[in-house]
Length: 148
Image 1 (cartoon, rainbow, N blue to C red):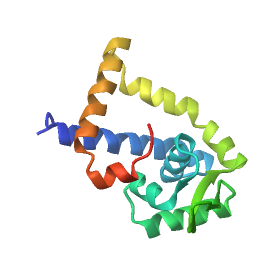
Image 2 (cartoon, rainbow, N blue to C red):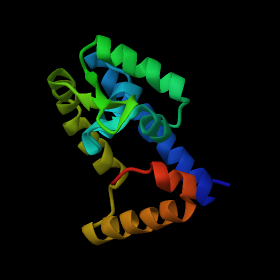
Image 3 (cartoon, one colour):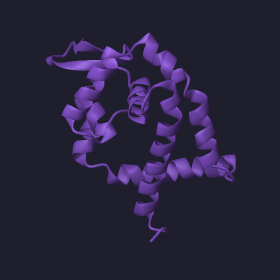
Image 4 (tube, rainbow, N blue to C red):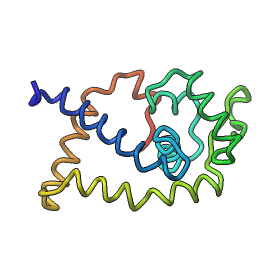
């Protein structure tokens, strides 16, 4: 069972989230908040719906997370210039400062996960995992997908 690609992928994701949560707590953040900030760093100005999709939570849950992060001055909502009903989420300077604290621990976590793989193997692994992900992305996900 532990060699099943679906099981392994899910378990690896769970372990990454668990470690992220462990090293974010001492800084007063949650792993979910760090994931929000990482998503915004990669895709500045994404909307709440897309963010909810990326985090695999309901839009109302994402909205509540964003509410708390706005109150903590980590992110801000800005009106979407193309849709007056929608909001775009941007990181504040405080959010960037907090996220910068996690750059080294995230790099260490990734290096630990990839220990024993040389540079070529790492590139191959990234390419293969990207192809697997692309094979699984549905048309609906494609429309909501953001850049890597």
